[in-house]
Image (cartoon, rainbow, N blue to C red; front, side, top):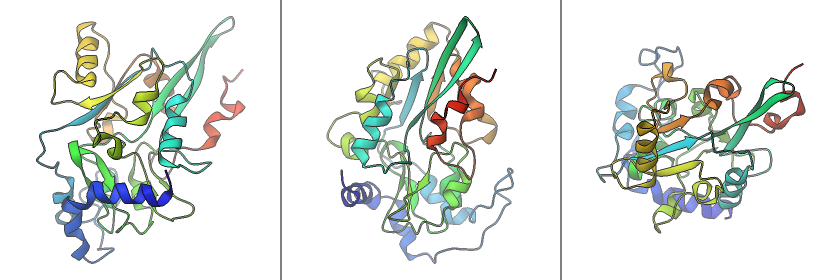
Length: 271
């Protein structure tokens, strides 16, 4: 998919949302920090409150990642790059790993990461141009007719899920493969995963793959973990397995993005 095509479908994804109303609002409004207990500066609440609301479409898209099944093939990551024409050195989705244990009992754990599509999304609060809003099923989307590449969303994201495109100079993140959803297909990563570790769907539909997977995990009394709950972002991605606890420290934070350094040999277990 070319950069222009990517821009086209994301524009279509967000054109009918409240973000459209933001075009008439002056860019770079004065910031305030009162709404952010973490100390980051957000835009005034009246500027983003409407864009934070889910559309009235009855859908609630979410994710479940079974890290017990992930064996680190990076298929999800490659599929995402191919589907969205992600440039080398940048990532919308990345599988972060860590070696644990002591020889000869050593294991490598894997944590597939991407945008968490938070219900209380810091990127929406921080965006000075009003380019980020909620799309179908509550997907957090960027409108490329409005984004000016200021990077405030990168500074606000607690999961390092946004990067600035080196050519377009605009913010890029997971958009739940909106262009595939409108044709009845899954996001490329979920469709590609050979171990069925990635589940996506409508949380409001008890028969969806993600709802069924979450129900089964609960029935088996498996721990359901959401990363960095102290950020109060209400992410729509749940994990099970030991990897979230073991690898959380390696997940990028505010002001960072997913990087090739995640694959450095220096990330192998320290001796």
